[in-house]
Image (cartoon, rainbow, N blue to C red; front, top):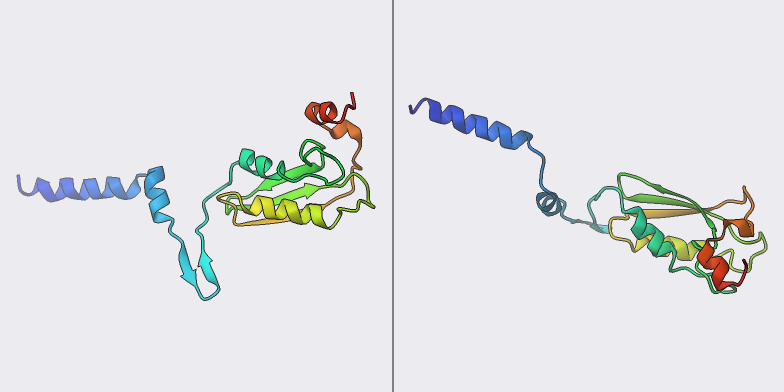
Amino acid sequence: MTETMPLQSEEKQAAEATREMTPAEATQAAVAHWTPDGEVQPATGVPPEEAIIDAIATVHDPEIPVNIYELGLIYAIDLHDDGRVKVEMTLTAPNCPSAQELPAQVKEAVEKVPGVTSAEVDVVWDPPWDMSRMSDEARLALNMF
């Protein structure tokens, strides 16, 4: 009987070694560490798309009282496993006075989302923006039915 005890113990160890971690264990294992450049947060996986959209929706064009997501200025959101986020956006016009500040505001808002390790914002012009890209909420807010 004493001979089977080590075998059961070895089987138990093998089973525990191959099982996946619970979310709590994964969170505990993913601890930030310090480097000479500062604290480095561990990769946490793909950030939730809804959280990214909510962050982008906090950015408003100063000339239009509607957020840029509802205006249809966001063309693509690419989420990566390592927490990187790439956003493709456009502006209402190439000579938009906010051309410098809006992409920077989007980048800053996205980088504040938990799980995002970095954000990149590219301004694209194709396809050109038009009012058909606006959400119904934006049309209602701007009285553009």
